[in-house]
Length: 324
Ligand code: PBG
Ligand code: ZN
Image (tube, rainbow, N blue to C red; front, side, top):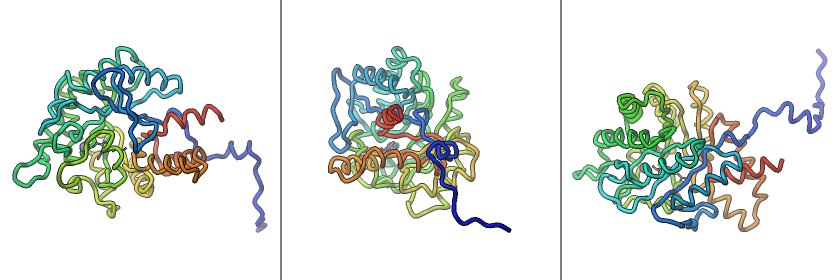
């Protein structure tokens, strides 16, 4: 048989025709951090370009996002008052519920995802109710109030709920609570495989959610475990999750690919705060061709199997795609 060893060189048109992976502005969800007050837009020192904003600034931000073609956001609330059970997140006048209503009123075309957790709302900074005795999170007590938080989000007008606390049985619990409250068609995107990671450092500055004692290793996953990571996502699929997620993204692309090959659900990656901060600091010191590296990183997520990218780079990427 004739074998030709020299590959035919493709020109740029043909390279575009055969490209296997593309990045589009439609792939992105942009994270926003909301606090009470007016005229507040405070940059996070570890994350240049990321701000804590009051609702009036958030509304302006939505205008800008839509101009860039970004219609999906994920909301994180920073409450005025934190307590042991995160009451602010369970109240229809809390920071998240009131923000959802205001955003929906002014921007009904925005797709609002809510991060459902307790660490931003509790004074101890853990992702649920603490067991007085052993100082770890009480899984089942947390499930109960998680159902309440989901219904608060849903009634306020959220378009998708994203539980991030890694409690066992959370998807089943939320699905049941939402169905019973009449929200049978509200989708759940699970932070289904979430590692106990050092890459969340800058986020905890912006969300003011560093645990006051201990760490999250009892409920988040061990970075060393591949099989456990797959099982967690598959378990959430069985419980009724609509979308699965791997978080962080960059150090776990092998896990993204393997889950993708074992599920038919859409998949998201969370390109987290520490990953963003690393590229930003490299940009500041002129160590890399920043835009090129950002785009290469986004391509790697899609190539690994992600359908959705949650990223602080979303606005920059949208601009890059417009220039192209
Ligand atoms: C809340 C939550 C966290 C992140 C998303 N949702 C913090 C954490 O688990 O400590 C991290 C996002 C990031 O680092 O950008 N549970
Ligand atoms: Zn949490």
